[in-house]
Image 1 (spheres, chains in turn blue, yellow):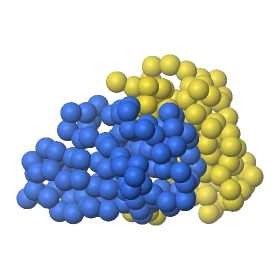
Image 2 (cartoon, rainbow over the protein chains, first blue to last red):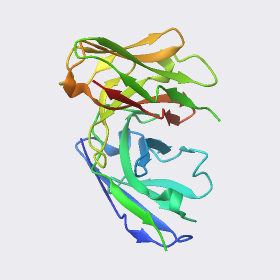
Image 3 (spheres, rainbow over the protein chains, first blue to last red):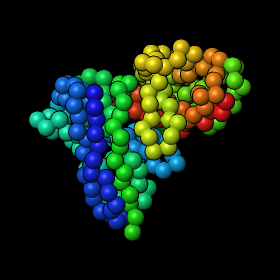
Length: 121
Length: 110
């Protein structure tokens, strides 16, 4: 299993950004996926999950209504579209694999290296 | 809003046993929460899973680490702690309906 996040950059408050996670080493459509972030000096925070077919999505209250998780099973890519970004969203964003198509329970597979999103004026 | 609580810090002498716990604000922790434990030694590096599905260790994890449910909490026990076990430890609980929540972490000093 390999997960590789990308798309992080410096953005201004209020802007939008999409980060991506490219996956390999497993049958992508057969597994739910998650986004997790870790702000500087803080613990990890679970953000969102999506089922294998993309039909079910779930969000933490902290990002509900601002972030949208999606996936392209033809390209083996997971996305997180973020809008209304604030300084509190500054973090390293990671994707993590779920246990099966309908279960986003994290497996013990390693996460990717993460992608850094910095929100600052 | 459900909160997952861990001891902010614990200290243990080398060779002693220490138990880190992970509690839910709204209910008892059970195996249905699929407790998972992560270790992060270096800020900026992704946390590594050391224990999942309550008590299954990841490959390469020393057998002094064990996971269980003790009372109404998930627990990570280190029997015979080593200096190299000094780290930040985080638990993760699955609440159902697609939602998971991390604990605030325990800073373990050996």
